[in-house]
Image (cartoon, rainbow, N blue to C red; front, side, top):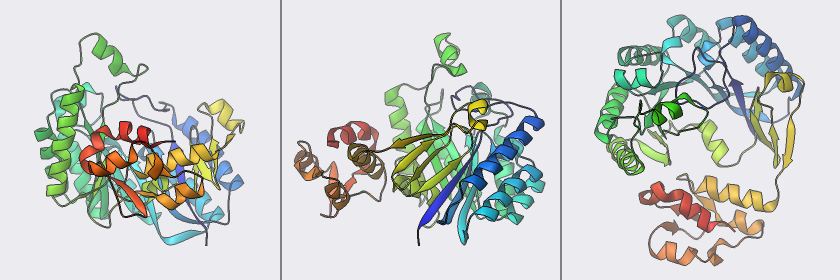
Length: 364
């Protein structure tokens, strides 16, 4: 039986964070209602016989949807798709928009995993990057979410001003003490179209430099492993059994459908891209991209080496690429940079911080 994952993009925020360069907007309830209507139509239009194994509401801030709006989208999914009873169903949420009422609603509507955008547990940092919560609220809302959901994940940002690896390990300990089962650790990325770029240019914000960021990440990752979590992807740590099944499907290049503004899909080797403006999205201007063998080879290597699952050598050979003949391959194996069991290749986690260079060298 063929399987698929569904991603629902909710491009709305109460306020954009200073580091954010994602496609997201601050709009009225009426604008969100309008978007939900089009979203439901797209879901109905793109139904498939494949069975849904995971659903993921991302953004933006999906927790901004009120109960009625969320229920309408969920109904459209279940009316048009065959969904496994045990399908992983994730919703991203910011602490300030989590309420007991909405948690109960999510539970009724089959949500079983919450991903909370904590980012930091320093009030000073949270204020500077434009978050709408403080440490007290983040911990209280995590505790509340855990009352209703066993599977709670939290995000942390590495590289923020004055935040060391020691600080990040302390944040992680506090989150895990509340029952968080999964932690995603993302490097602070600076985009020219994000407010933080101007803040840095004007001397109002001083993120960690590259060496400090790498050092902080390594200290955090060692701390998380010491706490019993497994590093199953470069930026993601989880207790066994609590890995994000939805994201694993991306990294294994499984089929997925993305709905909404700026969403992407991969179905039967074809990529689909939705436009990033409401006007073009409402006009149905989805773009289809057919991947050639070179594109597929590059994706298999890039995604596989980011994860504990590794890269299947046979998959590459089937596409005409013998990676063992790559000029860097033997040296990387001899130096322990990559390991192999003859069926798969794995990147040694010690070298995750230079993974981009290693992966680039192993491409055709």
